[in-house]
Image 1 (cartoon, rainbow, N blue to C red):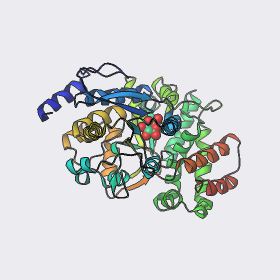
Image 2: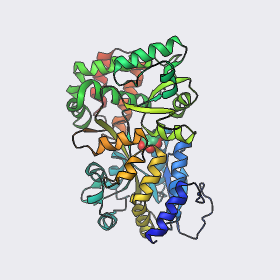
Image 3: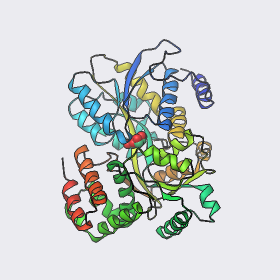
Length: 423
Ligand code: GAL
């Protein structure tokens, strides 16, 4: 497709004028289709996935949806495994981090080395992103977007009404939380779902223990480091945060917490910035209705999760079409349009000043922090950037028990020291 045509497509897409492919809707132009297994089923995630489908359609690739609901991909990972075991892998799967390399080890993933060379991925992608999709000499997935996990989203109207400043420190947070509690407003939206607890905890941990110890705990996975008194402080902070979630906390979808911010019944939420995409999908304006700050203690730090789509080997032999899809996903126009809707930021470091200025405050701070070699960058355990599914689930479960069974921090530290090495 000529560059001019592609920009026309992007303009139409951003103006919502493209015939958006809904699930298995009929394509506007005849094109071979690819089954895509993913877990983007919330309003914001669905909107981003449908936009991706519309953009890909104009590149000659039809996105046949195989969405598996469930935030954080808990169910999708299991369904993918069962489809592979039944000999029916999808053409494309949202595989990220450790689950990606596991499938590559069994020969399930189509290498994308030719695409990487053709599209200059080593030159245009962030080194961390290129590293995440490179494995044993092959490029094994197409990177889509970078999410910032250490994000605190707050309701701008409620903060303005009470004359409160953005919660950049835990003292700011506590001052605001006490005012909201007194006014009958839930200070912090919360869910006891294990993966969501782990998502909050790793941001709190980074802030309490600092970059160096975080890397020992999560990347080097040193069991002894989990007995450090600073981990105890992080666990105490986690329990303290949960005490601001109003009535009895329960396990509920992450979208329920985002909804409380939208309805002004809660003032803050700590969640990956996909929550920003959700709020925008419901009509909230970033910078005006809501804004973001780094979780206190983690300014100039980027706790990241990179979404990637892997092309899978199956009996349908779609290699050429899969390569075309991978190439389209990293194209600048697709990167800018998709990530603006999803709440993530482009995986490319060559975006223009104009595109950077067009980002909302949450996205701009995330992209600039990720691009800043002076900032510290930390992989998310809760979102599979380090360790494997078993260790992730074991850590999340230990944290869930700590909160819901009211276990003491010292015992939980020992459980985490064991859990981080589960496999
Ligand atoms: C993450 C994923 C995000 C978002 C989130 C909530 O693991 O990377 O794209 O979808 O789950 O479902």
